[in-house]
Length: 356
Image (cartoon, rainbow, N blue to C red):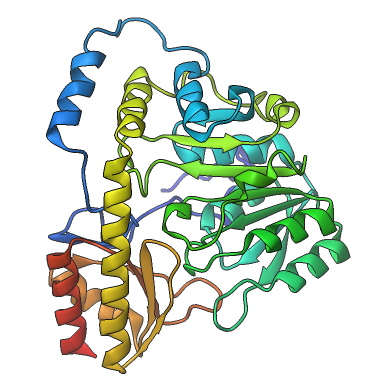
């Protein structure tokens, strides 16, 4: 007989589910988690491990990863007082939401957006103010501003480029939202390196209510290292740091970050290759004509097919993992897949061509 623990637990748990990846995380061709298809070169891994083996493994790392913070601050050309490093950007999201929301707080989240935003808001018993995307999946900026004002939202989360829609918001749009709503605005730039738009980093010194979230998991190919950052003004960052869990970033991640940033030309080459492949795959899909493909500003593409469940299952049976994002608002029968290596993309195109 199943035990009932509901009386002991946060009632918000009834409204959420544990995170899972449909189809798993192993396949011949894995295009379902928006990762970089390019791993770090062996020579860099060896240099990183050679340095790391001299670290004391029996000692805690710094309470906060000050060396990693300084490394990234120097890379961006800003003060370390404006930067916080975390164990992936997901941990930073938990920290920021804990610092900014309480029961009854109103948080505006454009729909659809990264599912973790809504999950965290529900856990904190905040009130979600939805602002739907347009039919072409682009941001409705006037609608966001209007909804934020109508509901007096005090916190706004903008994923730009957006996951799962792949659309970006211009710098002027971000400035308008922050300026006309007066809310704290978190700009999640996980895919910024692939975007044609300008980063919101330049707004941090201009507007005291802007926070920028960055991850090293996408363009920098460090999904396995779990490195994320928040950049904002020192006064706000000092408050956000209060609920942050100490010791969450390892010295290995700090060392890895430095080596990658010192050889950033490798990142630039990888991004350029992914953008070339994105254009090639987009044009091939667009020429097919059997389904809709959306222009992308990220490292992934969205297609709308007659039956996403069938296409997903058929591709999985062929050893190709994509993501079925049909459960998101406005995205019925949509599939998402990141850009892989050329041969992987060719396989995907061939299988889609057979089916559609």
